[in-house]
Amino acid sequence: MAYLTLNRPLSRSGVPGKPKATRRAVARQLQLVYGVGIVSTRTEMQKLLAVLLLCWLASSGVRAAESGLFPSRTWDIRQFQASGIFPSPPFFAIAQSKDGLIYVGDNLGLLEFDGRTWRRLPIELNSAVTLIGSTRSGGLVVGGNEILMVFPDVRDLSRSIDVAAALEGGFHGSGEFWEIAEDDAQWCVRSTALLVCSDKDGFWKLRTKTGYGRIFSGRNSIYLQEDGVGLLRVGMRALKPMPGAEQFADIGIYSLTESPESNITAVTRTPQAIWRWNALESPGPPNMIDSSQPGNAHRYWHSIRNRQNYPA
Image (tube, rainbow, N blue to C red; front, side, top):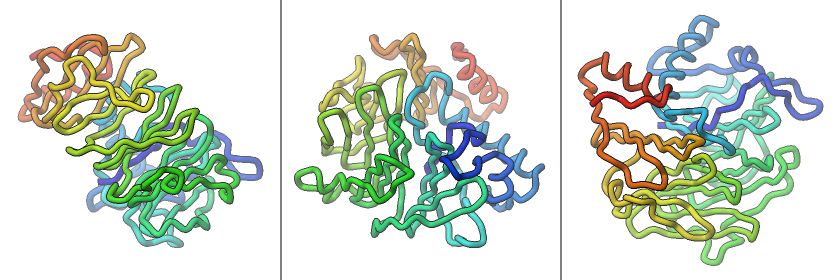
């Protein structure tokens, strides 16, 4: 399973002196392996993009409802091969900066793609890169096993902040950081054992005794699922249970989005269901998905796109 953070058009201009990272350039330079097929032609790329679109809808729900940070996604891509220069997948994370540059994390560190060529960045992490996030301020957040680095300006990677060194006790026992989310006040990343955030006053962290699930960017909120506790809103240096939070204490949330009206849509795997409720209220009973009927699945995904209730 790989985590991707590629949500802005690739046609945006790169930094001064760098070419645009266009879709055509990506199609030329990247080889995507989905299952056993290698994507190398335009037709194959179009087919793969259609498949990825379906995965995108499945994992993100109402895409337009999200704002701010480019949230991490979960995809079933077996391999993401940059070029012959770097033939050693797997790649664990991918993000696009506000300038249009693409960053990919692998076992050795960080790669950058400017629309034409790849280069390995001179960053010593001593860990596989499992998290990359591009923040609203234009910075780059890079994480791995018990490691979290912040680069305030992607055009000057000589300037960096070692977040573990900035926090008392560091990240011992945190494991690998995987996902990132942001609202107007802060951005946060999570591993299974640790939540780390950055706000106007600096960095803060919060450990869990039971385990953190996925983290999501809402309309202007950060939501986090904690095992044995449920769905939480990340506040100012504290976690606040949502109304009815306990309903998700033992249910992993696969995807969550929030509309401008604060209506939340969440997808769970066990039970396989769709949940819809207002953020100020407790969730009602979910609409179960009969995955054995392909027609039902199609109507289900269509209902997410149109914010309509799926018939039980």
